[in-house]
Image (cartoon, rainbow over the protein chains, first blue to last red):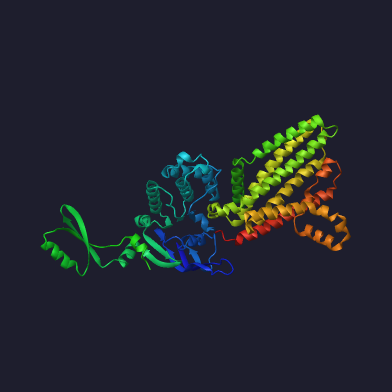
Length: 283
Length: 257
């Protein structure tokens, strides 16, 4: 769906200061129909890459190719985008703002009303649509922004930290909607630094570290690549379930010793690191 | 589609500004105008309608230029700062359409402001027996043109510098643009060819706002040459188009960080 080819971005700061390299020769592709998590610590270059994708800023080097139908004149008619920390027009109501976005996407007022009827209850924002946006909380802004992103049934949705500032229940609801929209055939590319959210719903991930591509591929591949040569032996001790972490080399020896001590062994499992552990460790 | 996008952006920009209660200033100015006319009517001999007209046209100009200044400073810069521009240009909307739509939206509010205050001025003027003549309407059109040039000048500065400097530069150019024609008439300038040449050059390059001020013709019922009106209108239109061209050029290349 999108192909990034050697994207670099250098910000030239003040005269005597060294230019800042935000992105360094980043290349990867986003396959159609998947949910791709875009991971990286703050300042890794995620938002910069998204801004380049959306033409808000220009890359210093490299190009981006979109695989949309050649009949489509403007790629943005196929893209839905939600910025990080959205801030919308404070004196418009949520409904007016949604109509504004829908009209700009070329939808009729009837179609926009239909879409609002469909999505507003799902985003649990229907009760506030006739209130001015300046009265909205951060979570409500995310919801109304997310709803506006879906109005024109885009083929590709790009979300920049869509779950930040949303409470745990809200996060679950938004994640359910992301999965639901993806099942309808929409490709979703979303950046986050909340690793557990990415692990929960994404098929594959793109890792950026200090502006460089650290990993691209499926989450399973990433975890298997970083699998430790360790296992966990779960056993019962005085009525409590405990575990012992052992290296694969010493696993047989430890098991034999535990059996000799008449310990009730429950299971032996490979010690798979979580995505979060890898996130802090990836090179 | 292109015109449609511009219209949609202009419509919601006007809506947003109007809902921010900016037109309350019209109400306040209207009340002030009624108060001044009441005072003039009771305490002025002979020239009541002239005082009312002068006050009406001055407040019309002041409030409209004021709105152009204060709303213009943040019209585009706040869109970038708050990233609201991202939501718009991530739709099938070009940067030029965005800018033209935003500017037309604010111009719409300015025109509503001018229209309401003009009607109020003319109503009060008519009620106290003022005589209507074409120069009054020419002055209102000149105020509209002046506001458009002021707005575009502020939008231009807001794209290349900070808000504080935008206000400072725009205010300086506004004051100078009004004073320059008077400066040309001073003995000091008239006796020195170089100074006259510099002042003439200034008027050619930078906005000569004094051209739009024809209140003296209105208040003292002096006849205004029709060619002056058309030349000034053309000047205003072409200067506005020139500023709009610069704004579009800058915004098209601007990194929207």
